[in-house]
Image 1 (cartoon, rainbow, N blue to C red):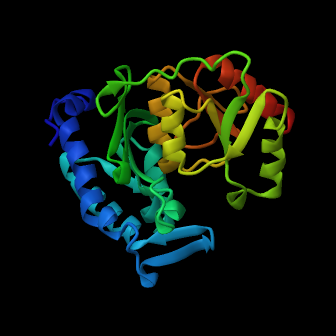
Image 2: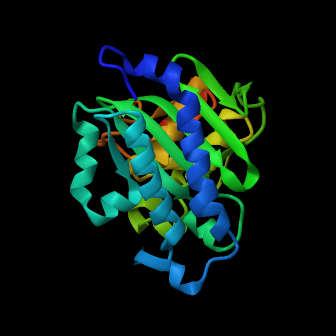
Length: 281
């Protein structure tokens, strides 16, 4: 519980371990028991056959909403499934209360197909600024964390993205074709040029982690859902990377961004890719 005169940063110093425990417990109780054991009635479609939701998504988000809210009274939760049920919930990102941004199962399609490439994403934001993030790949037992100004870590080891290797094609994970319109596909095709090797993304959270680890050069996405991006963008920033929208500005989790945007291992790469994307719009 936050003390009356305590800042959010002080709360994090005192309670980060409690947040981690809440995330691990939600995954252990609601996600991992269903991994590779989903019954047909536990999987539903939302907007279409590629947009899936499972009982694991719903129940893990409910548990995280309760547990995170209890840790930080006065905070609110913006979760993917809650916003799907009531889009007005998203407006909390523009308010004054601290906001937990939650994606209970990022990479639901992978989860449904028995692939371990999924994760739970949690970020804590205040007045549009992401202050802390947690990326938990439960099936791999990997936890990446970041606190603004304090660095990014994977299982306790500091992450440094570093610049790409000179002379090598930039590998860029882009919005998956199944989730893009024809207009968005045209914009992203600008990356199909000499020196760049685009590929479809999997779990956005794990792609961001790969950038922070220096295993992937960048991502380029054309949707704004804060639960997909908030945790990973802070992770990339704190590992030394950068992110830019088509307006040449950092991505804003509260929305209103010029899309597509990119997040990369370093600022030079982010500018190069943003310039390429701008030529197609």
